[in-house]
Image 1 (cartoon, rainbow, N blue to C red):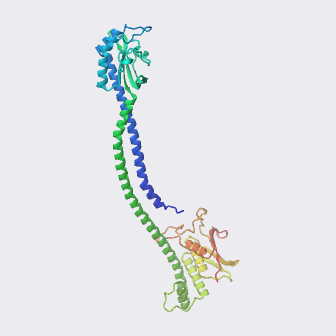
Image 2 (image 1 turned 180 degrees about the horizontal axis):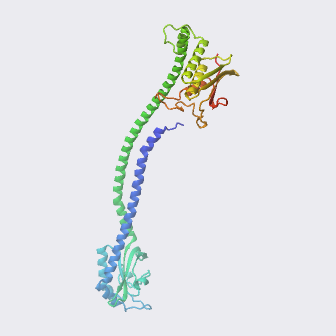
Image 3 (image 1 turned 120 degrees about the vertical axis):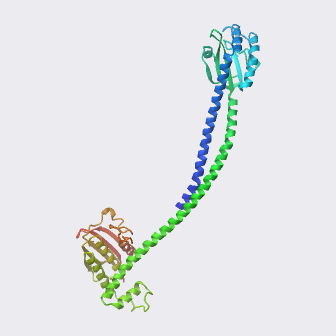
Length: 425
């Protein structure tokens, strides 16, 4: 299965995330707006039914008509439609007019026993109400949702008082919950087109913005990839320059010894085609080894350090071994050592190089990264990069199937590095 690259995943996230945020924000906003709209509608209905009921209860015509009907019945013998006919004739036209003018579902007026004087349905007139009105007959007001003959309604009940302040009846004004739901649906229907338009507009804007950002991210990824390639190339060139410097010391040593032919042959070996004559074949290993050792000693002496080099008789000092020796010894001197001991031997058909020094040593916390290219215990004053020599040693050992071990010198007290590589022929 092919894995998506981090840059591609990031671009997908950039394209998708704004749209997801827009969808979520619009959905939440629409939901909140719908809740607020419903609360506003219900609050408006409460104000309307309460206002209409209070106004009717204070209307002189209502008070007079209900007061005249108050003695038509008793708790034990409730008045009926016939007993309340004159009051109904006076109040029903008012109730019907108010219902149409205020948009309420019903206006019901009762006597002091809760018998209906008015009701939109003639059959309900003269009948007692099904919901309790005892608290209202006691002088309290009520606002809430109850279920009556016409269904669930949001209603207000207000007591009717005579001129002496005694409660003689009740005015109940209500709006069907189904009507409130229909109003809410109409309000939501008005809101949805705006929400949809805002959603489409915001989504298109977010997509366009995402495309612009994604394009810039692609450019940034390309620049980053190019930058990584430049860094890799720069590090490779620094490593090659480091190795070339080491080889120049060998050439200089050969020239100083007067081994011109070996110098030319060595140049042909490390840089084929650079000379026109092709030299005199392969350089003598002994001459190259002597020149390399002399070059290392010269470098260490210039840094104020001495080199104690011991090479076993059966060791073949080929180019790889000399490269390891030169870099390890040079690194010890650069780290501040004054005494450097190098032992080159063979063991089980492999070449071992051990370099110890009396310098400050290597912090155990840094032991795992001292062989990393670019790591150094000293500041880079040249601007060309440090920490290359030990990286060259590691690469050389790896190329020859070997290894590098970083430790501490028991004899000299500084650093110790052990390198093992396949023996050359």
